[in-house]
Image (cartoon, rainbow, N blue to C red; front, top):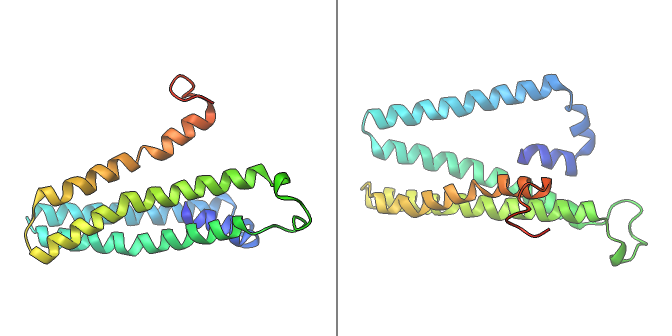
Length: 169
């Protein structure tokens, strides 16, 4: 999703070129295969009771995907912060509300990803450094990861108005 947002905002011509369904199906299939391969590798390392290999594999995945996601999100934030064509003469009060809303959603997503991934990365580094699997190192990272997974659905429900009993609009 981060790469798709990046293409849509920073490179809109390329995004429109690859917008047809066949390209999306190819990308989704590739992502599905990568995710299932990752799960299979994690299951095999755990079934072989090789916690050190599991931790290395998990940590390398996070260290690979976090910079890609952060690059895409920060590039989108920078693009949204700049004025678009024909907006230079406008005053700040007449700012595009959709652009500001998209900026805040991407900002929340960026903070959410950092909140989810960084504690688990720190826990993995500590486990590798001390060469011992200690559950109390993983627990705070997993709690952050689980809590961060609720942010996007809650934002969606709030935007659709389904959380009106919990949040004031």
